[in-house]
Every structure is written in structure tokens, then in C-alpha cells.
Image 1 (cartoon, one colour):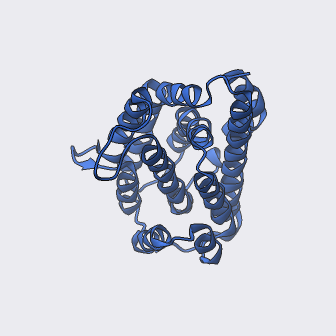
Image 2 (image 1 turned 120 degrees about the vertical axis):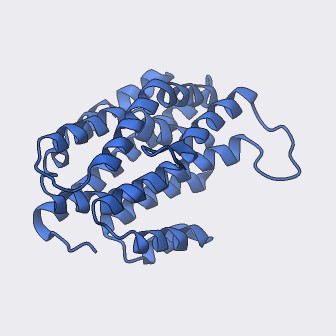
Length: 261
């Protein structure tokens, strides 16, 4: 069993995601805005997966006491350090979510409504119901519901699997595909911040966070075949959910062309 279980389970869906048509469809300034307007919610719920793991694997309350496995504490805290307080292209300390918001503003998107949505969702003690009743597009709703359903089950090995195989393991290749697509366009807006964001994730996730996340899943699953199978299923569901998100964005680009202000 172990990691081969996950790799076998996700190989087909992972390949479909890495060959998604969306990457080559972002051709204009409005296409890029449409993509970022939806993708920001994936950036936010990534941070939520991360903090769910930190809350579970370390002590984040007072009075402080040692909690859990010190090696697991180290792995998650190291990842949190960069994701929550990295350095942007101007040398400022920011979370990657805040970097993404700045990149959105650089291409001309107002982020006020998005920030208000995130605050409202974050303040709810029934976040799944809050997502369902929101005005977000259905493809974003399904993506967020998938993520927070995993978080709400509070199984560390499942959260770590969604984080690792649905995000960290995938992001370097996925973001490389997006950057390759952008390089062949005539987009006139400032791509500096979003290019930096993508390249920073490619660097961090490929060289540091990816291997650390893999180790975290292995430690949490141990020699338990049930946990490995659950981790494999969650990983596959996370990738399928991402495909549905990208299908929705692609449809917006091709058909609806919403006005973003």
C-alpha cells in the first residue's frame, strides 16, 4: 500500500488536470481577470487546509503544552512560515493569499467583494451552509464545499492528503503550464505580481514544501492500509474538484465573459 496506493489512484485524473484546456485559453486581459477572479478562492481555501493541519498537529491555544509528534510539528510549521509570511517581489512580508490579492489589483480587479466574501465565510460556524447560500458560481461552491468537507471531518491524514496531492504535489507543474500559456499571449496588464506568485509557488512547492508534505502524509498514515486508502480517495476527489473548478472558469472565458470591476 502506502504512497503507491495514492499515486495509482490519482494518476489518470492528475494527468487530465495537467492537460486541461484552460491553460491555453487565457489569451486576453479579460480572460486573465476571469481566471483570477475565481482562482483566488482556491488560494484562500489552500490556506484553510494548511491552518487546519497546524491547528490539529500543534498547540495553537493557551496555556501552551507540547502536542503530538515533534517531527510533524516541524513539518507543518515550516510550511506555514512561508505560506503565511513570505516575501513578495517588493520585499514585503505577506501571506500568499495577500500576494494574490495584490496581483489581482495589478491587473485591474477590485478585490473588495472577494475579501468581504472570505470574511463572511470565515466568520460562519456553519461554513458549508454559508457556501451553499452564497452568490458564488456553482463551480466555486463545489470546490469550496469539497475542501471544507474534508476539513470538517477532522481526519488529519485526509486533510494532509488533500493538501499534498491535491495542492503541493500538483502546483509546480500546474502553474508552469499556466505560465507557459501566458507567455504566448499579448496580455497588456502588469503580469509582474502574478508571475512572481506562480514562480514562488513553483520554487517552494517543488523544492521544499512538496517533499515535506509527502513526508507528513506518510507519517500520518503510517502502516495503516485503511488510512492510505482514505488518503488516496480524498486525493482523487480533490483533483476532480479542481477539474470541475477549471471547467467552470473555462466556460466563463469562452461563453459568458463577465464584466469584472
